[in-house]
Amino acid sequence: MTNIQASPYGNNAPIGADMKFCSGCGKPVHKTARSCPNCGATQRSSKGGEKTKIVAGLLALFLGGLEIHKFYLGQGGWGVIYLIFFWTFIPAIVAFFEGIILLTMNEDRFDDKFNR
Ligand SMILES: [Zn+2]
Image (cartoon, rainbow, N blue to C red; front, side, top):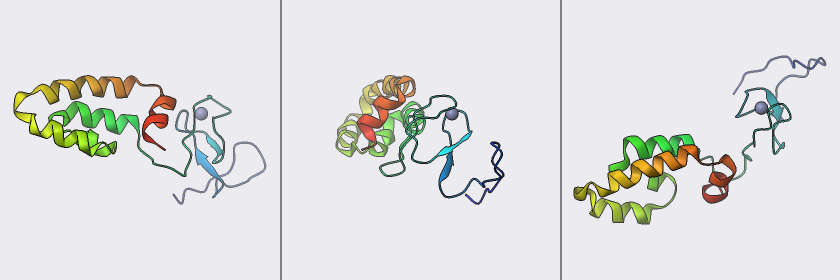
């Protein structure tokens, strides 16, 4: 991101390498901050995976029968099992509910489970 802009907090410090935008409110926060001082949203660390529950949830909802979200979440083994039972439509139904769960899941729990 080459989006350099003046800090709203006075000292004209650019939003540079040490800053990133809050995943909750979009305000700049320091990249090492674990939560946003402005809205309290938990910030994903830049180290591990960058999987998001939104992507996983939408994959489950719309491509559920194909179990793309299982591969996305690194559970490819399950994806294969689901593919074998694809013709039963059961995977699509299960994936639909998994999508709902993923989308409503607490961000912390999602990161705990899938972003290590
Ligand atoms: Zn925020």
